[in-house]
Length: 135
Image (tube, rainbow, N blue to C red):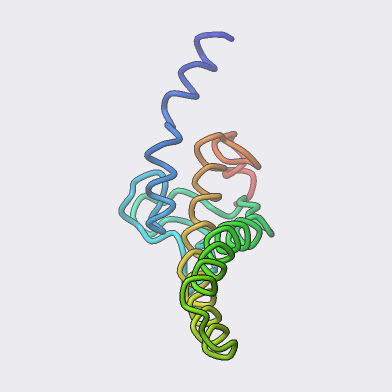
């Protein structure tokens, strides 16, 4: 690795970018909103002007949401059933509501996180001068 590539990696640390993405904020400045609406990524940050049009979140946020929600809810359902033996409809009503609520909570945050990772690692045109070519 050359000094230039090392400098490029250090100017966009992944940790702070991920935390900003989880908060649905711009990974560059942390002030502007990353999303417009529920899941639509803005073309650019309204505060610093960072371009987000190259993001490729695609199915990643949905996959991660299913993975996390499934791994949390499955053991909880088993534990609740073994401990209290509730009626099946009661169990379904409680856990269906919890599953939907947790999924709706996680999905935009995980989308922000994936866009932030792409930005910090300069993936898909982030930080390669591609922004000037897109205009």
